[in-house]
Length: 472
Ligand code: SAM
Image 1: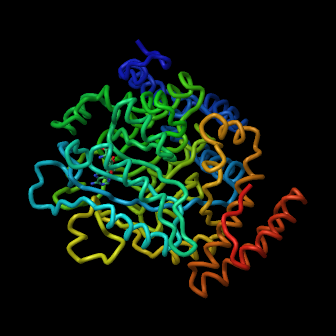
Image 2 (image 1 turned 180 degrees about the vertical axis):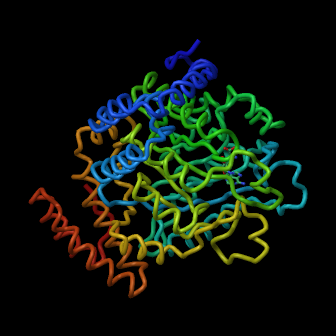
Image 3 (image 1 turned 45 degrees about the vertical axis):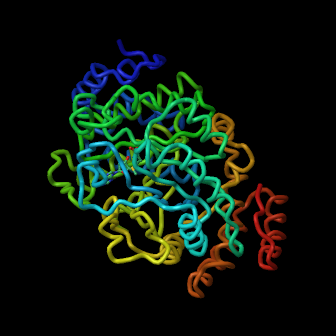
């Protein structure tokens, strides 16, 4: 029944194949010879199958685990350098007709304040985000065909892209809304979205149905096949994720990689990103009520093994996680983080204390963006506000080709430097700017191509003089 090329959810995420992979991993978790072979394959940068990666995830040999972490760090450095891309979520509406038992926006929650931003309010939120320095947003909304129809989402995207405040601009809008039809994905594509993100929550069908007892999201196949429809609708970049804590992490890990293999097999391109959210406390939600919570060590191992298994897929961590946890995961494979996030509807412009009550989940990392940027730079990372690939049509398989030929450094590194310079000029505090200028001077010297280096140097002078939006 298992068939990565099938269009049916239960065939490409085949339950028996997941169980067989978990059995195989368990039987081989101390098999040094096999683990060495898998690590050898992983070192070639070609990635791993879900079964191979599952063995690494289960591996109990301390020395090999050290090798796994070291390899994840190496792959991270080789493919992503020291760049970290920044984004912020923008909650448009928390009206929702679904019954997801882990989410405070579930329809039966009658006391949570419901809110949907008007276009004028979206403008205010976007200006507040632009004034922080953000260039890339992920819009979020509950599922509600009456309150948040696709027309509302499309109008909101148009509004977001239209706002040019001072030197600000949102150059990439990623979209995290419920599974929808090919027709609607086409419309989202035409509206110029970046990545379409949809978390699977759990790949285990039985658990999925219990965790989503009511509403359209109850339909496991419709949800699991959403990325296929998105790609059929013309969206090149899709973002996968599971909500860790709901089901056994081993099950989710193998199935997540099977999903990635399915997209690669059918569309010739795997997911653009993978997110790794963990369930958090929220209004009427107690994360301890779920049996499958994972500790920080297992979480780190999951991130490291995903990094090794799918080296070309970006990995995202949100402010659900603390500063300490984020620092650890950055080394192991995370390439994108959010900063200065608010998870309530209307949380950026004049936030009210009661807004906190309508948050989707508690934020652990509450630092403002400027502090996050300074922190990243002090850790040796190069914060990037780059959206150039998207702006230049380098999406989907074209993006992956550039990644695979390791050419990405010639684009991403200079673009990261220039967008950081823009940030420093327009939004940074004096202290952050000082740290940033030093870093930029150092990073420019690491550019190997002399022509690129001299163009970047010229452009940095132009940015200081007030010009914006340079890119390779
Ligand atoms: N309603 C859309 C959907 O169903 O996919 C949009 C996504 S929702 C606004 C964003 C994500 O937040 C969900 O997919 C879920 O994984 C996550 N989430 C929900 N409740 C959470 C909680 N208590 N802690 C952490 N993440 C949560």
